[in-house]
Image (cartoon, rainbow, N blue to C red; front, side):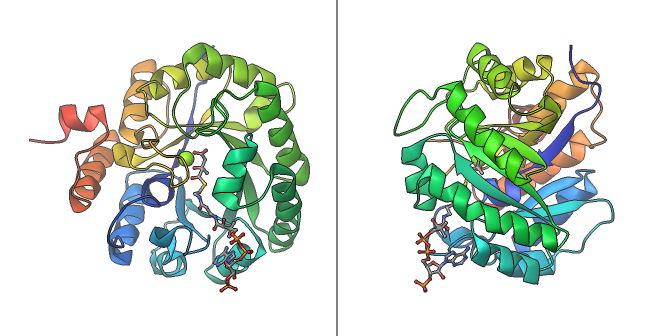
Length: 299
Ligand code: HMG
Ligand code: MG
């Protein structure tokens, strides 16, 4: 059975923009994007990433972005923090929720965060301890849950092991990333069913990319298994710098259209998100990656 309510976690300012090639997206544009998304009724926004600017130049102004936004009451603005250095910078910028990110694939872990899966977990432990000491909630990501650009197929049991380790460490929620968007519905269901034997399904989120156009089908499939937290990016923005060929996250507009059709409540204004998606994709000089935006949002 499908959930009655879905919590949508907006990814455009972080996952959406981190891979943007060429010139830096102006800090003011990032801030306006975040503020528009909050005004549309989105209550959970991944706003920035406190990673090494050498690795991901586009997120180099994370502190300025976090300090620059006008916060709307009831909205949580979070940021990625791969290590203690990132966490300290995030805390200094007033971040109230952070996320650590690991992978189910050894090769991807090395390419993305320059360490093995085991080393990454060792590195996250003090990040969680310090964050919790500061009253900051921590989310955990597992990448490559349905396939890896370097290793190919990934066994669901490997995803479950990493997800469980992040939960045991204190992550309040584990977001399962189909980083390169290769999943299909039955594989997604099977993966969720395996992982939910180790982590309660209420603590799992689906973070699907739309490379092969399967993200909406995959989301429908995992909602049937009980998933009720969905990560998505307005305009379908994004890609991963360490996953060649990966396209953006599933578009928020497309997810909202699906949920509206299913009678599932999110409290988000679809039209306002469409307009935001049209605005940001124009600002970046590209076409919206959302089918709904193409159908409704452009003239
Ligand atoms: P490293 O080079 O091994 O780090 O990188 P290090 O600890 O050896 O430090 C090297 C230098 O980086 C030092 O500077 C540090 O101070 C600096 P130096 O002394 O040489 O001048 N440094 C930092 N600077 C700023 N902020 C920091 C930081 N840490 C070290 N936090 C590291 C390791 C993890 C830092 C690096 O690999 C990195 O930043 N990786 C981030 C990659 C990334 O952001 N990927 C995209 C996000 S994940 C994703 O998109 C997937 C997801 O969406 C889910 C899905 O779709 O699957 C979440
Ligand atoms: Mg992602």
